[in-house]
Image (cartoon, rainbow, N blue to C red; front, side, top):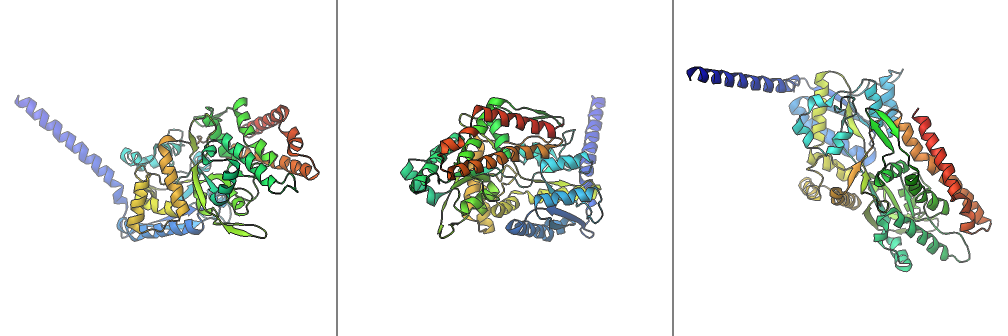
Length: 486
């Protein structure tokens, strides 16, 4: 009995020693930081305007509070556009003449991060985050960041977005009343096509002396999202990725659905794409509605500006339409932050800053200005948003607020999706973005020329919407994808 008691005491002592050693080793990383000798971190991003101002304000707040306490000082720099940032990062990694040193942290989409990871230049964030840390974040956001071959985390989720539909309410209402259209019709992509045809015909009828001058109703940004998410809604994953290797999945009937519900209405003039973004087209009165990123809400115009007139407009925010009968998938997008591989002190300090930035209060403060979704589970609710607005006394643009709350309401019934990263993924996405869009623009121009020569719409568009036309495009589309994936 006495022997067993001594053995038990020895076991307890060993366990306590092990726990103490574990705790000390866990605190060891903290001892790397010294408030008297702060670690300096450089962050590169692509934010501009109000987004940049909001990010810089949070960086300043961090430096004055948590950063000062822990010994971390952050400096942030905008590199301009996303493409400018990607170029600057690649030049830094390649040590090109005149390039800056690679920053400690930089914004990155998954495809670019995958390239940098393949070059061995990214820190393993899993070394600095516990299971409890990771549990705080939306699961799919964390999963997107696991781009290393061993499944460890390389992309820290910082701000995300999905797609919404925005409508010029002011000009929608008289059309809807006269044509018998409703917002319920706009919940499916097929419904949008039907409404767009009605709008084209209605606007054409307003000028009976000028036949064939109907106007487009709808447009969309990011056609690549239409392909990727549309295929998911129909139960087909276009890029099937396993261990970094991609298998192309392009079933004909599913792609026919996508072709019929984008290319045909584009060619007939029911849909349109004129400016750089569809919010630009709403401003010029060329379309009434569009599907775009949640972060585009701030750019939705307050008025329509025509050549000889302008008028103020109100707006409607809706969930992005889904293919009829399809599963409720929506795109998950938005760059995260990656940490350059360096030394343990800098990597740890970088993660500490990112953890602070993504705390619910800070992340929502950024989202209120940028239109980006917060990344923690706690922050993704209208209740938490309202609480932060009240506590921080934030002024939030109504469009941004309505956009965020619309998505919060939809998230429980929506599956967010983004394809896994793979070699040449950026090039494959460009095929999705431009292959059909460029053809639709070219063919629409030919149809418009025929209309000006006196042909009616059915005659002018007939040659472009046949089964043969689809087969020709389908073959060229598949060939283009296969070429970039070789």
